[in-house]
Length: 566
Image (tube, rainbow, N blue to C red):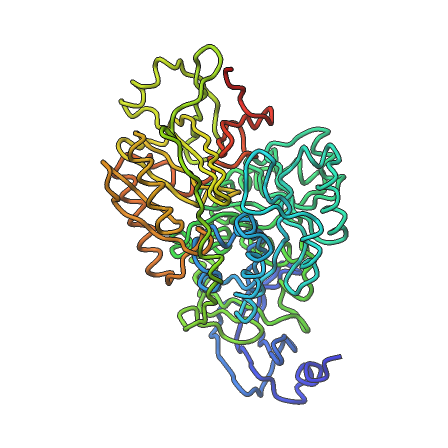
């Protein structure tokens, strides 16, 4: 028993901190009431009227809620080093992160996961890791590492490791794949995340029966409702490329449905967007705009997320709970006035110690020797070419076909681009080449080493020469973003940490990201797509319907490569 808290709660000894004249957001009863908050040893000692404290802050009637929780995110997708990313989350009121480091794990395995944990241990944030379950995501691409159950066992019980990350291999779950079952068994009794876009019927029932507890891939209320009915908690996603919140929350409001098994997440969100909007705070604001009561939105952002993940003494304002708090100016603008972690005020502009990775994590781009014509299109039956059709504002694609004879003219007119994925971890020389429609690039090439989930090098271009120049530039800087036009590098943003993250400060990195995006749009990239984030998902062979990996064009619906001509 914590004697100090008991004594402070009874006004027998002074609190270390008193937040006076607060409006308490009580997520247990769904009410707001006036009171003081007494804090000691990083925890809330009592709520009521407290006179004496070492420090007393008069909040003058401001609202105080529990610290927000981002229930599922990939820190690497921000492209900021972990320390900088966490400070941006704190700026907007997030005090707890549930992260899945499968991006860096696909490049560097357990060494990458340990880096993410070590780099955040001393930060004023609750940083939890869901162990990446699919490294690689499927057997249809080559990643930097293969993470099996035995390797997971080595770090499964380290501080900060919470459970098992998104299980993307749905067919493996349904067919009792041994490797998948071993991972599920290893984390039995702990939180297990799912990843099942569009899954319905008996397949959904079986997926839930296997022990999957959450899913963040619902794009409609109907899909989310079906998963909720199967006992799967729904994480409502609002990221940079995937924006599912409006469709789901409007459905919740229309049906008058309970949100007790729902939370907010971002999955993948661009640093520039986080810098402007925040993450969970933005979800709360958007949900309220869709008609959800503010209290329900805050419950999703705090206590519901904590309960879904079994977090103890996090997500509410009550005696004995951690003093992770957000002081709001009001519940309309949703602008944080002050953020507290374990009873200490957080200064998001303060200087932090960013842990630098080992040299091995900084030298991760190893493209093999290229053939004379690396971007030549493969032949398919009946002289037809598969075409990946992008869907505006989504990472979903459709599958189309075009006669081989029509391809050169379509490329010249800018209605098509070539797209290629090059294996960049082990110098295998693997290259998958295909066609994409809807990206919009009119002249030149754009390339990145951020290519979910194996993070090979992906390049889109209107001509082979610029595509080759882009590959050479990213090899030179050991990963990042680059734009090439007429044989010249227009701009490059190095991402030296595993080809995924920068060590630059958020302010400067945000400016650079916006500069590159603007230049890409000026070269014709559609305004309905983020030039780099959306591109990075074109290599993810678990999102319908057509994708490309370093092994070729992949039909996600049939879960097999498109058969080539002999």
